[in-house]
Length: 252
Image (cartoon, rainbow, N blue to C red; front, side, top):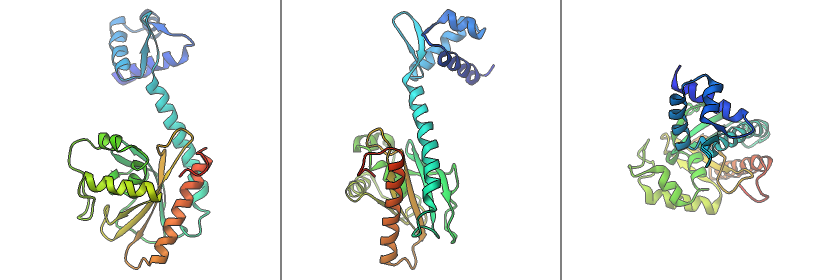
């Protein structure tokens, strides 16, 4: 039996019980050797997926709750985004994306394709370095600088074009600006000739973004007036989605 399947069965047993279970209880319920169950439990406890009490009994750990919260948030934000994105006349012909943060990457949860082709094919499940995208920087801006640096690690920042942010000091300056103005820009940082504007989607639990929305356009011919319209529209979409998710009034 593969290790992932064994671990899943073990987590299922812990989640189904109303009380903590002993090693013997779990071994008997799963028809697995105690040595195998013990090894799996040690790993799950180390990962925060299981918890061991003073009586050497086991229950679900806090990591499982984080996953449950993430699943609920993503399900809700997908529904609300789908309901709201088509109501914006200003965004009607443009490509609009919904993304979430996964470590130092953005992952796209949904995309409403515009009427004009872009240099990048945004698709559900696709990912890019967060520091190169408007949606990624919008979410990073809701985190403390210390957490941003922890997520990025010590390696050089990824660069997709010659215009991508050159280093951490420049990125932190961009994030500071984003916190003050409430929106971010990807100015040919993901693909040359393309400009994107993003804003964070907030939820009911604290200031960190649960997602972000962004609009991508061809930079050539983008007038200052149209640029301002897009920034206002994507900010309004982010605020509307945030409000539906229970964010405090004035957040987003």
